[in-house]
Amino acid sequence: MLNTIAITLAAIMIPTSPVNAMMPESTLSICEPTAYIQQERTATGIIHTPNGSEVNVLYPSDEVTDSTLDFYTHYFDGSGGGYSGDYTNINGETVTLKDKNIRRIGDPTTRYNGIAFAFYMYWEIDYPLDYERVACEIRDISPYLNDHSYEIVDEPKANDIVCYYSDEGILTAGVILEVAESEAGNPSGKEPFVKQLSKLKVLTKWDRFGVYEHRGDYSPYLSNFATEYVTTSVSVGVQYLRRHTHSYTQKYVADGDKYHKAYCKCGDYSVNPHIWIRGSNRQKYCEYCFYRTSGFPFLTDTLNLDYNDVDYKSLHKN
Ligand SMILES: [Zn+2]
Ligand SMILES: [Zn+2]
Image (cartoon, rainbow, N blue to C red; front, side):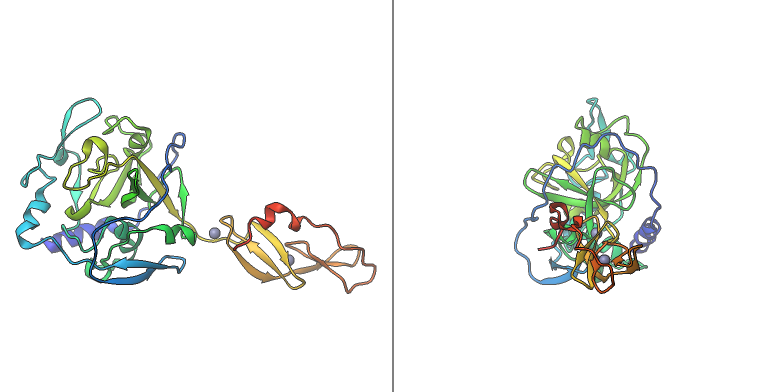
């Protein structure tokens, strides 16, 4: 059983190239990330964002025991537990989950949560599958945004992260595997964000029930899909996050006689030496920030360069 799951997941985990991500008008990104609240936990630790910031994590014990494993394993497939696997779709029709291409690919457990899976574990897991090594719980995703490891986008692509939000904060998160060209004809709700979710194939963890591969709108965190066993709060919006890699080519701002700051579009910067070239009047100036310096004959007064304007200053880090 475990081997089968491992092989299946390994096949799924092969990074997919981004598919066509052209989307209709922007609809989402309505929620601010907040801490993910749960009961007290037994141990804590630190991992790092892709850009190197510290993230506090918890190492919960597993509350899924041998006696409850079966219940959680089969809860959503309609073959056991207390749930038929049915939900009512936008047209008022009853739909059964097991007919909807929903697959559980991770065993039920409380040793990690959906946020940790999407932001950390999915990208760290070795082959063969080794949840044990990286299992943890992350409650607060702000380190990933504050250090620009991720940026918010409106139009999701493969390998982006989708975060499901309630009114109070983030509920779970997942990895986007594929994006269809158009919305599904039978979304599980009428809201624009639900319709947009219906274009996605995602991996998300459904609380202690495990990680599921499913269409984005076929999530128990959504209104007419929610069940008390998975969540007490309903998702009212989602946010799409994309890995951001700094590129210090957006703007160059002089920082004294020797250096300039090279900015990324996110506002981060690196400090680099000027690259001098000689102008026609025998002054030398920096090829990038246009800073001029004295030391040559025929110098004129310092030019009023635009690196002092408000727009540039606003980019400076605190
Ligand atoms: Zn950047
Ligand atoms: Zn310069």
